[in-house]
Image (cartoon, rainbow, N blue to C red; front, side, top):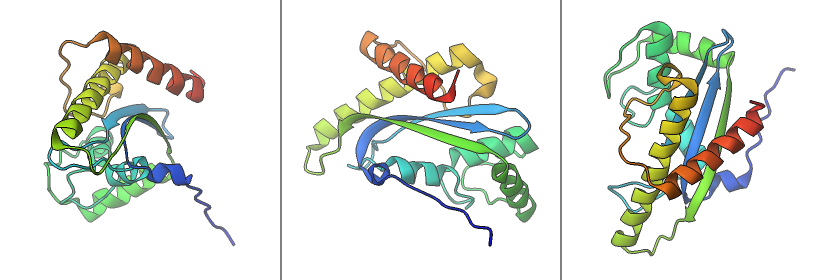
Length: 181
C-alpha cells in the first residue's frame, strides 16, 4: 500500500524569534523564495516554525497567513486574490496539483528564545530586531536572485544595519550550502 511518511523534528515546535527562508521548487523548474519571521507585533507570541510553514499553505480564503499559497496562485495561474478572499474549487485543485509535484524546503534560524513572561517592551524590541534581519535577508536574496523569484508581497527595505546584514549573509550562506548552490 502506498503511504507518505512525514517526520517532524520536535524542535520545529519551539517557540522562538526566528527568521526563516522557504524555497518552493516547482516541477516546471521555476523556483521561488519567501522570507519570514516569527514574533508578532500585536500579540506577545512567537509561533513555531512548523506552524508558520503550515499556515503559509493554508487554502482557506479567510486566512491572513497563507502568503506563499496566494503568491504562488498569482504567479502560476494569474489568479489575483485579495486578502480574505475565498479560493475557487478549480484554483484549489490546480494548487494541489502544483504543490504535489513540488519540493518545499524551510530553513528557520533562531535569533532569540521566546520568554512568555517577558515584558511587552522586551518583546517588541525582539520583534523589531527580527524584522530588521528579515528585511536584510530579503534584500540580499533579491539582490542574488531577482525580484521575480521572491514571493513576499510586502517588500520595503530601508537602511540595513551591519549586524542585521551580517546575520542575513550567514542565513543565506547556510541556505545556499544546504540547497547545493
